[in-house]
Amino acid sequence: MSKAHTYAYPRAALTVDCVVFGFDTAGLRVLLIQRDAEPFAGTWALPGGFVRVDESIDDAALRELEEETGVKRVYLEQLYTFGALDRDPRERVVSVAYFALVKLSDHQVRAATDARDAAWFNVDELPTLAFDHDRIAELALERLRAKVRYRPIGFELLPTKFTLTDLQKLYEVVLGAELDKRNFRKRVLGMGLLQELDEVEQDVAHRAARLYRFDQAKYRKLSRDGFEFSL
Amino acid sequence: MSKAHTYAYPRAALTVDCVVFGFDTAGLRVLLIQRDAEPFAGTWALPGGFVRVDESIDDAALRELEEETGVKRVYLEQLYTFGALDRDPRERVVSVAYFALVKLSDHQVRAATDARDAAWFNVDELPTLAFDHDRIAELALERLRAKVRYRPIGFELLPTKFTLTDLQKLYEVVLGAELDKRNFRKRVLGMGLLQELDEVEQDVAHRAARLYRFDQAKYRKLSRDGFEFSL
DNA sequence: CCAAAAGTGTTCACGGTACACCCATGC
DNA sequence: GCATGGGTGTACCGTGAACACTTTTGG
Image (cartoon, rainbow over all chains, first blue to last red; front, side, top):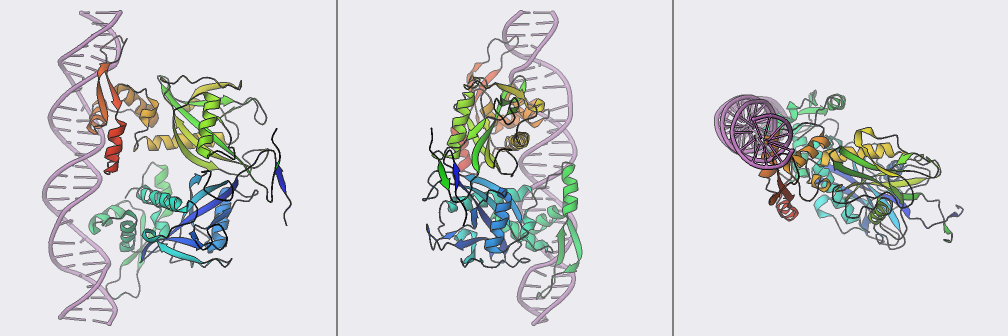
């Protein structure tokens, strides 16, 4: 049991909420958990929870993500802070929203430890969410769509080794548009940020595609010299 | 006097801090206030203060801005939330940072009401700031520089009526680069978002330049149809 | 008439886009 | 040998960049 804590003025509670994106053959997906406590018991919601007074907000997001979904090494970025008065019916709660990108194929995302149900939903088939989580998810998607064009964050959604077709599919799904194969490959290889590996994909019933790896070190080097990623 | 408020777990204090930008012949400037209380008494800092439990974060930012600087109708946008453990030496304080753009020429920005000194500083001659406000100001400047290219927010820094040379100067200062006069005018007029007025500037010792106004309504209309501002 | 800034078009290079066929592999 | 996706080059067009002189006005 914790002892009580007293302040001269009332204080808002502080939480984090995470919009976790994954990508596989079914498309772009978001990880949701089903609430078992009121309010909104039984409703789907974003993973998240209270920020402890002795941890940074970023740490809180990472901790909640691991506790509720088991994902550990992910791309994590602060999204926006939601502080409307009535966003939680119980009391004043301010929530710092994050968006996260995980490699579905590498990590096995396990269900929550605390018996709450966790599941992946296709981004354009999301159920109605608890609190203002619909708006949060919408904003995260907007940000992802915008940022994927000018920062190499799409690679965070793919396995370490991927084919150019994988990469193109990812961009097509995220941007919601078909892309020309030849132009896409020209541009993406022209940047010089992909390492061509001496490996090809396995177990396919047709010609196997070459595997590539994103060259993070080279990207950082080029960035310092003013290079701007763009797709 | 306020009565005490008690919670089962310790809670962080919640504040807002505002990076207020202005523009005039001297260049791009930031509004700072001099602290008179500890910690950092005498040091320059961003205007800001505590978020009340019965107001939204946005409202808190607007209120603090008006209380400390007198500015009322401004462009205000949430920037980032800072929540490192040691950012305030007294106790855990989480701060939601905003950036604001004001029309220096229209509004008269008065000094603070509460006897604290307020002053405009050139962006590249900022003093060392209290807390982590240096980083906040730096992030705000980064955001402004990036956003001015793809959203028409530069106009928030100019008087309602301005010349094309004013606009060009603004972009040159914000982007830190010289621009070609003919190309700039071609692009900016080509977007069709400027209303040419039947007025010219007054009291100049040479040929008077034509005045223009940004057509907000037209911009919103075009935006809905997928138009993207770009300069 | 001089100083100061306003205003105005054209040319060129590069990057983005459109577009179709042959190749390798597994079954 | 056939089905499936892998892999490749060129031509055209439009946008962005470079660039200099005449006009207007006030003092």
